[in-house]
Image 1 (cartoon, rainbow, N blue to C red):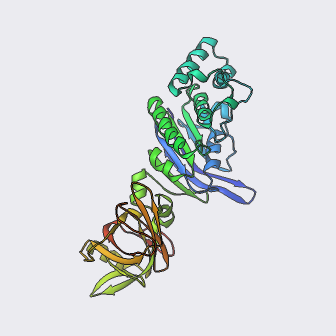
Image 2: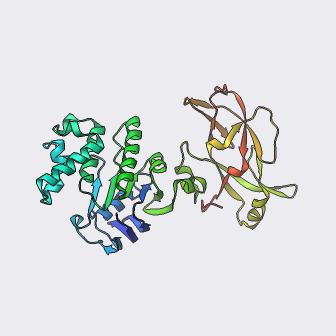
Amino acid sequence: MAKVKIEKVSKSFDRTMAVQDFSLDIDEGEFIVLVGPSGCGKTTLLRMVAGLETVTRGEIFINDVCVTHALPKKRDIAMVFQNYALYPHMTVYKNMAFSLKMRRQPKKAIEEKVTRTADMLGLSNLLKRHPHQLSGGQKQRVALGRAIVRNPQLFLFDEPLSNLDAKLRVLMRAEILDIHRQLNNTSIYVTHDQLEAMTMGTRIVVMKDGAILQAGTPQDIYNRPANKFVGGFIGSPAMNMIHGVIDEKNDTLCISTQDFRFILPDHWQDKLKTLKTRELVLGVRPESFYHVENQTETNQYHVVETTVNLVEPLGSEQLIHFTLADDRLVAKLDPRIPLKFGDRLALGVNIEDLHIFDSKSEKRL
């Protein structure tokens, strides 16, 4: 196992800054997921850890040894690529054994390691095949096996499941996590898929424009996003964003839009009074809405009325698209509620589930 320290690492390509002052400490045995939109610098960072990309500024340590300028072969890492990177002229066995042969390991030791790894990955009956005879999922298993046989101190994954279909991605996610639990190696995993990040990472690092926006456990980031971008990026469907202003009703501060008013709990009142801005953004998860049959308002719930724009039936749930105050929103409701385009709909909102962001800085309040 390895512990990794990335200290104020930056990478520029000419005048373009791909990674900016990135700092992160990774403990032994952690499964860290770097997630963010395409072009946010996550693959560039992974390649710098691997030694495949030079570092412009900053330092990288593996087990307290500075490897910032060390060759890849000196770092004791294994990398699994998006495109599998298998040798087409070699059999599955030879692909998995190649790195061990390059290290001049004994033939018997190589055979034992490859056989044991192939059994673990269900590849025993495919060892004589060539890559063109394999499915996408089988190729990915071979790429994993080639990394595992080396028994590295650090695994690096660069969007390894993006070429697979949806069902196979789910199976391979579970398989990678099972392997991680068995080997207990430190892993850094890059993806743009927030569902992969939520289900796989012991910690998630959300990136944008080459910088860290937030790092924490999946549940922490989901429940307390640091800013509007993180709130909208993590979660499927995405968090609803409703633009409003601070208003006052009967000596109580609330947040108003042209369509409705949210009266906030007492413990939020003092915070709202100290704010210098009046314009805010409310973040509401789709599951924080619920269907209201009798429109009675309680201290915990507020009711909004709207019209159904679109219904997406998903079997175990249905997604209801609607518009409030010119904002397009989505509610996740029980599929047994009969709804269709054009229906009038009353929705309750749990005030305790609201997230409030500054409309200018977009930071969480």
